[in-house]
Length: 377
Image (cartoon, rainbow, N blue to C red):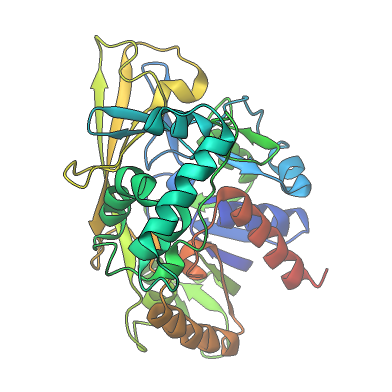
């Protein structure tokens, strides 16, 4: 069989690219190393509850074309992301807004909140932040930093805030209104049937092989393109895995952060924490947040599922979740991109292929733009 594209990865980028290419008359084969499609947005129903197997994913966008696109494959509910932060025995609303400030300082007006923050920034006297800690304090004051930023960030990155570069926090959204909606995008929600069903509709009619490792499945041809052991050929490769791994780390290893998920079914509990997401901002608590999945769909099901999310140091063989986009890694990625630009048989996409953290709508946008560039549109 002669294929136009071998697409490595059945996540969102691969599914959108495969759908668009197939719609244009191209023949695609999608392979996926996991035993399921949908990548990190995979959801699995159990006891009547849609469980997000790789952490919480809330779709949100201001991109009208992307919203119109995804709603062709799924009906979305009207879930609004309003996480809560827990610091010791104190609970605060996120994002940082008037509900947060009123609880923290017992104030009532935006003017009082602005004055309090300005006072703390002035007391700190930081004019040229040298690290993340100084940057955060210079933007939001010491109280917000100590209670809601410091511990969570140190767990997320595995380093002290004084060791992290200031550019990680370029700005902090301080909202002086009583509004707990985390995202400002006009479109927000979660597919009513789950993300897996949405991706399945994108891949409808397209060949997909799960439990299939790229290296064991295909190899490059001297004259260009790829082939597998069965004699199938592929004119081009769309690769959504790690770009440095694809090139056998010949220029060095890019750095990533990983995650570990601990999911528990509580058959006797109907409502464990009262909210879909609660962040734990103390450094001493080992997980960054607890997710209670049923709240993403406004209840229902038998019992409840909760997931504790633990950040982890990434090592080869672990699942890479977040690129470490500091200056050193960005320079190394540029060198890998230079290699990729010379390799006309391969298209890199997704957060690992493009070494960039993407929200879901940005993944869809990147996949659409990549296909259009490929198609000469």
